[in-house]
Image 1 (cartoon, rainbow, N blue to C red):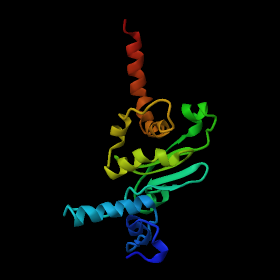
Image 2: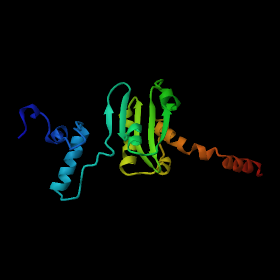
Image 3: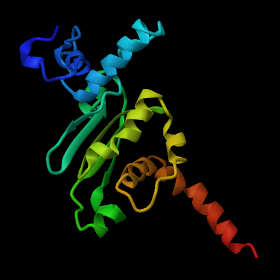
Length: 188
């Protein structure tokens, strides 16, 4: 039976709100309550293996603009001993943001080796934009595979791909690549 204070809330939300896993603190988000419920259902009803994994837990602060975060922050990644590359793309360089005359914001990606460790987005609808990075972190999708993603144009989500593209820019503009382009230009 639910306590009176929670009588108007579904039980699946109480799982998340009341949960305080050892060492990581409470996760009082509705989406975490749903996640906890899915773990319970998979294990109890279907006897499928399932365990909690907060590595790709998205967090959103619904301010104006929204602040969305998933995975490790730059500071957390460095504290964990990762050698990180930080990629940024300001929304001022995003065609959708320019067209809507609201260029406030930034996408920031934390990359280590062949993995996205974290993503932070400060932008209108940042909570809507964080999903692709949640999947990338949860499934350990390499940055080169993410570059193959076709994003609709014009959308704010393109800012994340633009940030990621800066990881490959040094190779694109390397002297060897420039020489190859000059050679191709001379061909009839």
